Length: 183
Ligand SMILES: CC(C)(COP(=O)(O)OP(=O)(O)OC[C@H]1O[C@@H](n2cnc3c(N)ncnc32)[C@H](O)[C@@H]1OP(=O)(O)O)[C@@H](O)C(=O)NCCC(=O)NCCS
Image 1 (cartoon, rainbow, N blue to C red):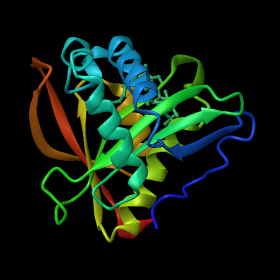
Image 2 (cartoon, protein in one colour):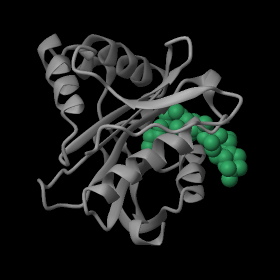
Image 3 (cartoon, rainbow, N blue to C red):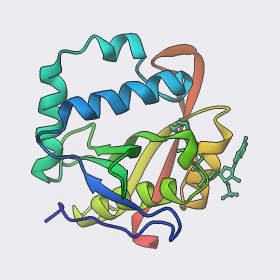
């Protein structure tokens, strides 16, 4: 039911948004570690933490992503040549009845400003809506103005809800919310 999201991304970029497949755990690991190295301040975990995860964890993550359930989703942006240029996830931190959260958002530097980012966000919103959710949440680091601008453009609004960034508690992050009934 939730497995067939495909968007024709920006006409010029020829990128497809698709679920990670069960046998792509190690490729997912590589992409995520690239994201953590590229922009450490954007994420709740550090490169050191996640590079120490056993390969089994990445295989499990890919297997769950491929199952297509309502609990979580992992999407990649793939070029026609098969390169991965973007990553995003969605999951329910409080279990099946909780509001879903958008996490792990990353677009490779060369693919920024092409529309890939919006398509990743909208595909997670499509998934959340299809699972019956009424809202989608995320956390963005204070000062990550580019990400906040993207999320606002996609319809998210800032909430009066802040917490320390788990990977660097000197920084704070702010919760944003998307009303799924509006789209
Ligand atoms: C955040 C990210 C996914 C956004 O993707 P993108 O392709 O760069 O986004 P877009 O270009 O579509 O949109 C970015 C918006 O920020 C604006 N922007 C660009 N540079 C900016 C800057 N330095 N400061 C503020 N806004 C900026 C753009 O004009 C655009 O806004 P607009 O549509 O209102 O004009 C991408 O930059 C990225 O992967 N960054 C590193 C990881 C990260 O920060 N992830 C977010 C975790 S919450």
